Image 1 (spheres, rainbow, N blue to C red):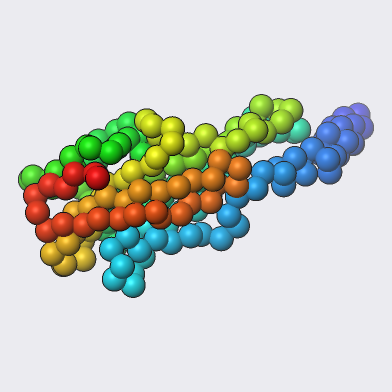
Image 2 (image 1 turned 90 degrees about the horizontal axis):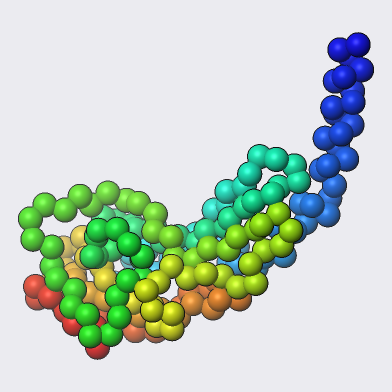
Length: 179
């Protein structure tokens, strides 16, 4: 009897794992390889951009999300450091050099995401930003240079999640204003 129940469960699982259910993940386009960004032009990557996917355990998958995140490299820090959206800055904002201790721990920063609702993917990537058109990021580098505080302006393609640096400025001062 137990053998019959096990066989029935295995047959049910194999029918629910049809190939077309798994192919739906392939219809989302995003960069296959990790991108790196050198924001200060010294030849060393300061950020990496990669993707991860989290899905429900049921078959067929009822919910899933693909997330594109920045990973801070070489003790680079996204500033301002506290909570909120990764792209929370806009033109005219001032980025201040942190005073006192800051925990320079490597951590992921979500910049784009795309959801699967069990039937289809979101039409476009959602950008984790305050402003919908222009994406600015403040940073503090730990590279022993004088120009270690700065900002970078990105363009993000909402169809394939590619990221391009449009402009970057640095300073050795205590603050920098996004122009």
